[in-house]
Image 1 (cartoon, helix red, strand yellow):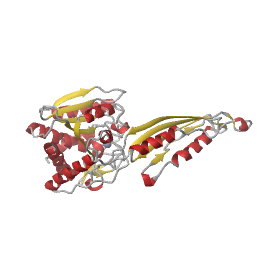
Image 2: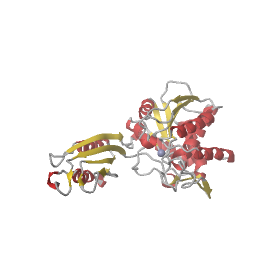
Image 3: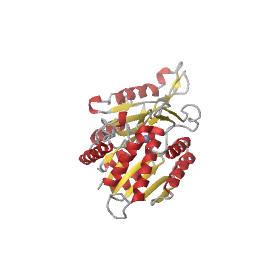
Length: 370
Ligand SMILES: [Zn+2]
């Protein structure tokens, strides 16, 4: 890897792009368009919706009707603008490159786009190639989910440039993610003079939370989390309202359906309360299929030729856009991005030494996946 190319990556990190800052995300998209300028790559820009930034669809390789190799990167981050000023300054310490979004996932997006461009230039792709660059992964891909599924249905393989796990492991299975909102309505009343007439929404919500948390089953890999609660208006008032979200993680589609039904079916313990629940599965589970296992074996042999051992991580808890393609039964490899640590934290870094071999691996995948 040469020094000028690392400069480009540093520019990417300086361009802060939290999901809800459409202008920042669009600056990132501009950088990708510039990166592809002199390459035989067709660039289609999809205008952002719902206040989000734009998406890019890059096409290259042989112009045939064969199912394509689909590569996916997101350029939004979880870090608010200004993080780079104080909390997570851009810096290099030994092999570690620190900065907002370097690990999740600008590092991997950048070098995989370089690999894509290089393969396009040399006309070396084994199949048509499509690279989706998205603005909204960190909030569950509300805008690009349907686009991903559309391309996924026509893809032979999906390669996702999310960060590598501990020591460069890649990902071949992820849990599915569900999101719910629960609203409990009771009856307000004065806590002193009319206690008996009140119906405390927080009390009822607490009962519901116990029931929801009890759906966690570690042996089956099912977890439910109530991570926030809001309710009440004053210390001396029996609260009328209480609201909380629920985060659900499951390993299988069947568990996702069963727990979703259980959550949506919760009833108040006392008919004086009203419990309203909305939501459902956001990303289906990414289960390791036979096709994915074969794709992994192929990637592993390519890595061995390059000189490193590719290992697959146990099924990870976080969802990604790979969940969409895996659910469509498209062999999917994830975690092909940069190695490092600290995703979504102020200690986020990427390992510079991991870029060259992993860029080579993406190059070889694009050249050899038939
Ligand atoms: Zn990510």
